[in-house]
Length: 143
Length: 434
Image 1 (tube, chains in turn yellow, green):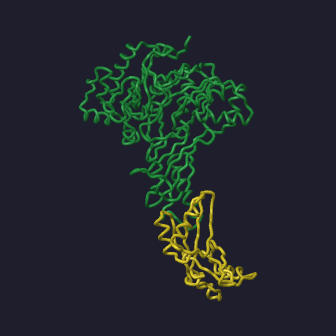
Image 2 (tube, chains in turn cyan, purple):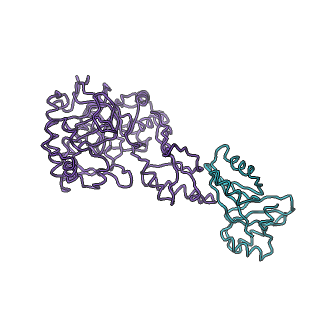
Image 3 (tube, chains in turn purple, green):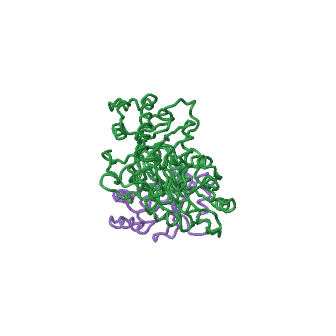
């Protein structure tokens, strides 16, 4: 199941992260997971939120550069080999992982990982085929 | 006792000098009318016949020439002699792609060498000097201009060109350079390198520096004189007119002597183009009086200065202009290279569909100019991965560098983080000390 991730371009300077989180707070948007990829000059803030379309529109209105990207959210047992099992499936099917990040949820004992892969349709089919549990939009947004 | 290279002309009484100028101006106008279609058309449009030039003040009847005229006639359309007579071609950086091309016949090269030799002597150089020429050799007129002038003078010229500062210091020390020719910022850079190499100014034989090709200040002059233990003098020139040696400061430092037997200057209001009263600031306009291959009628240099006509303490009667204090257009001079914001803009336009907002920041890192271009990342340019944005950064950097020919730093910034003034965005932030 594809879920929507919001990516925001932020400069590496004081106050820029909080500018984003302030907008989200004002609009009652709750962050489910986040990760930052950064260089010395800029970063990309990646967010899984409960109301992605609203967050995207509000961030754009406030002049920030944002985009919506489809990612997969995978649930796996929180035990040794849990992630290895998922990556093995992707690897065997030659699906390249562009980036990934883990997050926790109070609603489950499982580990949750967000994957951005090159061929998302293919990845979805292959993962499901091996019985790996993909979270639906609703499941993620309501975590 | 003052030294002159060509005393007869350098100290000529003004009345005689002006008579010579008029005679040469009339000849130049005549030749332009007959040999250059561009000028003939412009003169006819203005209803001017060469015979209308009866006094020096009649020059105001003639149309101005601007850089665009050279570009419109790219590459050789403004030449007044057949290509078979051209023996040298130089060019300067262009604004939007095409450079401006200048040509010289043998007579022009002789004049240029003569004027550079005059300039060197004016600065205090003589035939026993070792001239360390760190101006760039190539299409840029700086290197070869100083080179041929030095040879004409009979001095020993070291054609080291720019770059490799440690080697420059070693050569200055070992070869006993006495005259340094480069941009003022490069002189300060050499001083820094000397310090790192533990070479004291007293280890060198340098006595004078001839600095030009970029704007500088009295503060910079004082600093150079202090750290290098030399006299620092200003040289003026531009390729459209001939190259370096159009004017040169003498050791009295009362402005740059423009060699008036070869050039006729005016100072005009850059907006109205009307002549400014003597002693007032305006744009320098130059007419060449002896150039054959590429004669220039009332060329607008865009350089802002003031002219003084009183005889100088050095005995020279030629007009002096003050150090150029600014530009009447938006041209920047970065490490001696002419840069127009429009060049950067057109390079950016080739990157995306929409023109991104940008800011040009010029600063001085150590003693060298640094150029940073901040580009706003809009929705169109944004990609979700770092690699994509870094590729974008590299693409922009490459596009700008291949247009300007100098290295730049590109920095991606958030939209609206760059200041916008009413209507027109502020494009340039020059942080260099004036």
